Length: 482
View 1 (cartoon, one colour):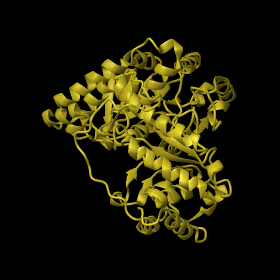
View 2: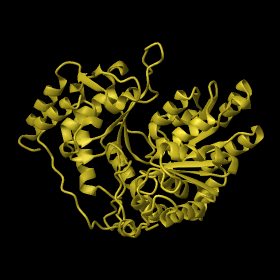
View 3: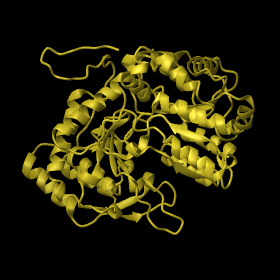
View 4: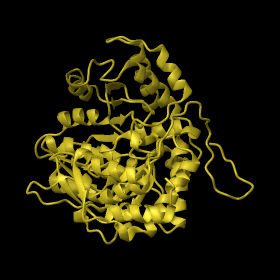
């Protein structure tokens, strides 16, 4: 990994790539931003991309491809069945993870659908370090339930713990003892816990989970969608792994797992997904669902060109310079916000910078979805689109009562190799201004609430006229600036 120091003493992440294709951006004036977010029902998912200046909603499917990925797309074997392109993907996944059986799918949640249908039965439990929205939905739809066993440190908003995504081993053992191993559908670990700040898991913790699974005859499943960031953190934060290559760390992780699935919209910087399986019997149980839901076994809902790009992207994931850029930019943004007193999740994780909204908007009750309100306010103040990761992203209880999230976060994703440092500095500046004027920001209430995954397409309205007051303050402070 490149180590470059500046004579000035500044700690600035240095991009180890150059920009060869550009896309023009447009920053609407603040009044137009208010109009756009109102029309979107104060849901940043429903904003039109042409109204967004910096799209920090997600890192899923929006990462920049390399020149080698784009070139590979031109040599795809465009066949429905038996494609040589798929053979290249299969060989690359076997080389990286060492698991023999591979099933393609169109994205990560498609993998979750297959896993849940095969492994989850009514009344079974899936222990995990922390849930992800679609993962939990698939498990519940198949009659199972989720038990989150994150360590106590994992929910600390400020910390110096390097691996806050780890599972509490004692809680896992107690859960198995209380319910019996036959009630455990599988144990799931998420490499880079999405909903609590992209915090990584450690190799030591995964090793202990493998021990418990072996003792109880349980299947260990790894969600590797955010594995690239996690590999970087293991490399730089675990003293026992600093002399290992990224490929060696990857194989040590994979050797502990029975199943690895991933969204290629994150891992590999392409679009698609896949399931890697160690046991042939499990593979055969899952195989029939691919033609049913995804497509044939050699394309799985992906285009052949995307499969070629994914194969190259997976290979590039073993490059330390490639996988370090995202975490380094995120760390820079987190450090700059900490300097300004803005409450963020520390240490910096993967995926993006996460603002701790319970401290940022401590005057807005959780019943008024403060993380969603801050996402709306930040878009108005900057044209930056972030994603609510809090109570809005939860599902109501069967009786209709609200489920309040452990954390209220505004996630500002850092798509890999997309933004320049000046754009990151712009986002930091507008967040700083918004924090100084946070008393102006109020809450939101639902006006259209879907029953399933409401955060994707639900619509909300502001409580009072706080948005108009925020626009007026922006004009008073910035004049005719965008």
